Image (cartoon, rainbow, N blue to C red):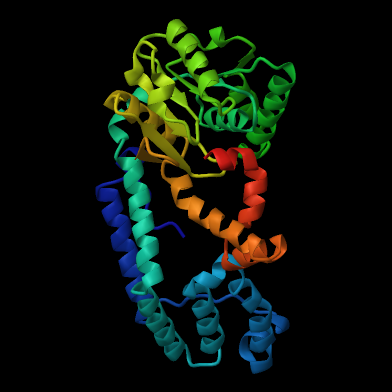
Length: 374
């Protein structure tokens, strides 16, 4: 039903007030019984499941495993919702609403609710904090050095957010694999919309020389985790790019100050640490050294926000933030393994608790050499 029409130019302000007033008026009318609410017609099967004790037990038996496994088991709301719905169907309507209101009120002040609200507010604050640099990254182009798993993922995320990308890798096979990954990722991001995919690919340049990144406003490297190799690359990038170009490293462990040592303009060198898989993981660590200037920090964080990520600015300390927190968890898994527990038992305990994968599988996918270095 349409209650009112307003020009697009009037949306907001007075129009929002009118919409709210209409909603309040209609809600009050329904509550007083002045307006009838047409309820959907239920089939015989739906009536059996909803309004008989046997039917409700069947529903509970089917749904309960879904709210008691994995991450859902750590939250009281799904279990409480199931109980309230099944209990309410056997009560008078007014009593059922009262039960629902009581459950909602108790859940709102539960420790889990408070923690989730805290996480949400801090996450949004991480985005808002760098809004002042938002305009600076609207016309930015980015060079990505390295066409491996991380480089291809970073390029895909940038292209999906309408950021022009120049991807560099010396290896022909790596460039081909990165290009295929980008195409597959964009197809998922744009749900197969060929026009949008081709438009994004039109902003994608691939080459074997860092020269193609010369005109970029930000360059992020995602190459092998070896300090001397990274230092050599950054020296070359510092020579060919503008003095204002931000040079970012996707390193997960190396000190940013050591990567920047000896190059011109070390204040523009910063860490921009993505997590794998880049397209799905929402966090980006923005790692600052003592030399990193506020412009580099702000623009790197603002670019992360443009990609839909949560930027967390961290100091140049061992493990940065995430790996520093993760390390004790992985060490404990290794101790359990040494005490005789099997890989299957350890990983199953973690996934049953709600982790997306077990700690030992995580170590295997990251690589024991990389994990040991971190």
